[in-house]
Length: 126
Image (cartoon, rainbow, N blue to C red; front, side):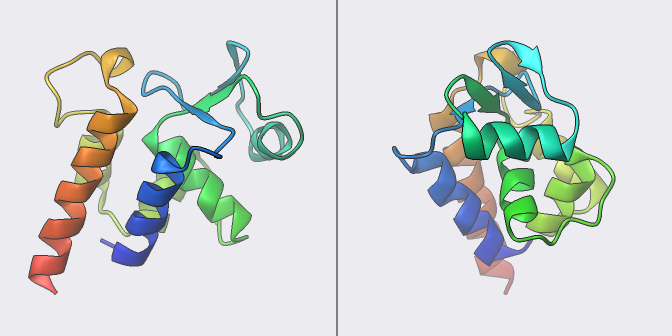
């Protein structure tokens, strides 16, 4: 795991000034309309973020795109690369497999707690 980027993601999620909301049930949407392509997402994030939500992978992808480091074709791969996760670890995190809840019921606080667990685990290994 890229601990530095995981911490950046955590800070993004706890930042009360972050204009993009949180919804584990959606990669990205703006006023309940799905956003499917990086330019559309970044336009929404930059110019009219109110009403825009993203899941944990979506927020990681936004950070990667803002860094201009995205070379992946989709949100999942971009976010996994940004966080330094293998495919299985990314799937567990992004699909909420660490929770017994339906994805749409996972709160931002629960996602932050899971990120904290992963960061601590990665720090213990390094």
